[in-house]
Amino acid sequence: MNDADVSKQIQQMVKFISQEAEEKANEISVSAEEEFNIEKLQLVEAEKKKIRQEYERKEKQVEVRKKIEYSMQLNSSRIKVLQAQDDLVSSMREAASKELLHVSHDHHVYKKLLKDLIVQSLLRLKEPAVLLCCRKDDLHLVESVLHSAKEEYVEKANVYPPDIIVDSVHLPPAPSHHHSHGPFCSGGVVLASRDGKIVCENTLDTRLDVVFRKKLPEVFFLSSNYFVLFFPPGDH
Image (tube, rainbow, N blue to C red; front, top):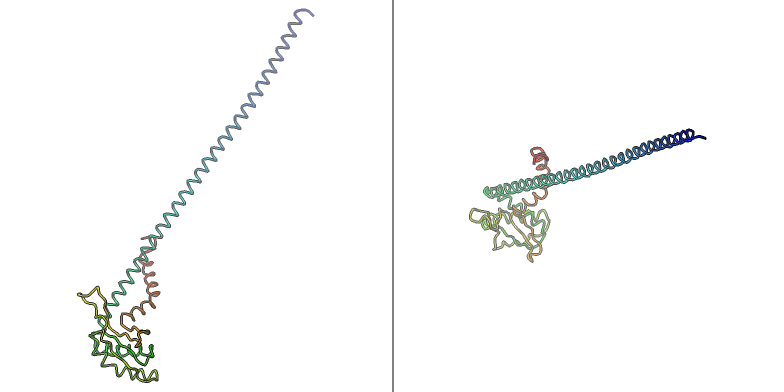
């Protein structure tokens, strides 16, 4: 083999090696690009996931804040409605108390009422001897109906006439501008057993309290409807 043949074979070998090297380099380049693209996609997806999670977290925080604010507004509205109801009931109670003061002005009507209250108290106590307490202003009216009240009680209870002693200590007077903050009584009577263990309060104020307690659910029902009608929950 001469020098020319050797040189030719060497060139062929060099060409083959170069070609293989180039192909290998292309393969490495393609593989590297694929791995880069995969890694880039993974990084992008990871960032997207982080963004979604952060958005969901903030969205939940916003929802929680909305619920808290709504709950606070609802509680505030309820408190306002309850306060308004309480104010309304108090004003109704006060108005009724003022009306009671007019009852004793009509002596004919009030005299009959005193008799009925005494009879009712006697029927509740069913004691042979009782102590009766009334306002000083009502003393003459009470004394004028005691006999007829005893007779009615005896007829209804079928018992002996009770011994009724009118107490020298009187109930407080009706409220006035001079004694608006002190104890007062709008009228009526208080009867008790002689030993004081059994007491029947039958004053007009006590009767009003009893009626008000019985009717309070209806009062609250009517006032609730009033406030729902005129003050819807969202308007407070």
